Length: 300
Picture 1: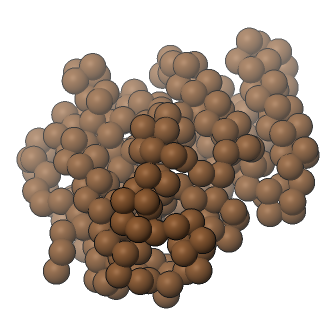
Picture 2: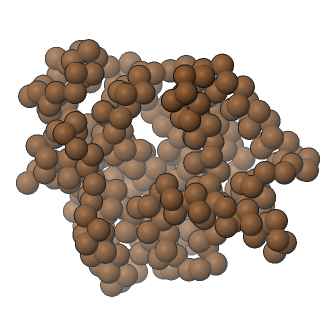
């Protein structure tokens, strides 16, 4: 490995460790040789997402568009063999080459990031799924060749579903933060069905209709977790503790929302460190191939 490539992997690892702590913890359970490749994918997606979010916080809409298009062009050029210098790109390009990752997943991801430049709400869940196809499901399928599975085709749909489950979990947890950014990721049709207007949601009051709305979205997320669970035993033995831990840790966020009485405004739902440690130990002790039992977000 060249010095520049090693530095790129280290840069991505630092991004992962700093901004994706739950995911980073789970990644520590992978064989050491696999971890840098996961860090590289995280670094690429995090860096891209930050282009949109950071400039959005600064109120620079035009700059966001220009910056994302510039980054997309550099990434595409690098994929085509054009020498491009950037701290993230050597690691992600090497990862794509080593595992022959599908470029269509990266195209879908970048397309969803472009939606974030102009779309601030989604009318229906199908509309939101179109966005999540690139921002979440594609990341699941990017990861799959690194995690490995004897039958990649059988594990593909569960991997997609796990990506969707994780992102919907984030949307539920971060309703208040997204509102501060002028965004509503919960479908407007769902709001209307529970008698909640966007303005009422923006008031950040955990009224009974709002709590019922959040409970409904948790049930929807649980459906994705249920579809993802059968894929974990299909993975390579060495990857199963990592994904079991991630599944449990993200799912536990929903447990915390339920424990709060579906109030996503009073405090950010976080999983205590001691509980995460228990998940790590439990995942390491779970025999490979054992089905995942129980679903997150069940009422207490």
